[in-house]
Length: 149
Image (cartoon, rainbow, N blue to C red; front, side, top):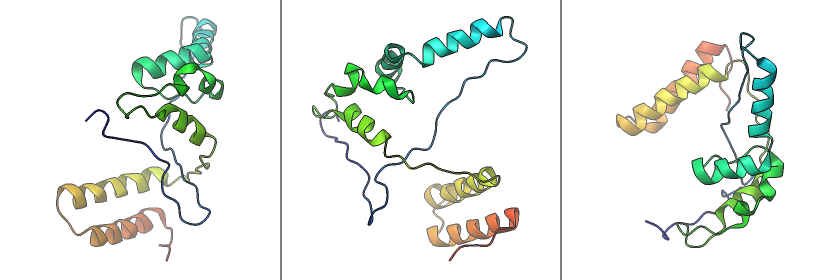
């Protein structure tokens, strides 16, 4: 499939955002660590160094959250797989346009319910509207929140 794909910003309606992200990682040093200062210094070196971040992008496909890394040369290179398009450059341009997401204390409950709804519709052939209506009711019951709309 190499050369048969391209990347574009998400479609938008009106002035809404054309990009999004949902994910990420974190790294913690447990209090019981033999040498917590050394561990924290190592984590800072690995994660807050543009060259290391570029290496992780190139070798593991981990797009950096450390913004200074986006000025590394890999983010202006073209991708043979994407027909010569500079996809990482596009991702880097879009990074600053990602709107913040604020989660409530009920986000995990809602996410589980919606995940089950997607499985029911996509894998089990259930009616998508009925499944989503049921999921909305389940979320309302589980959280005590009103259903919008």
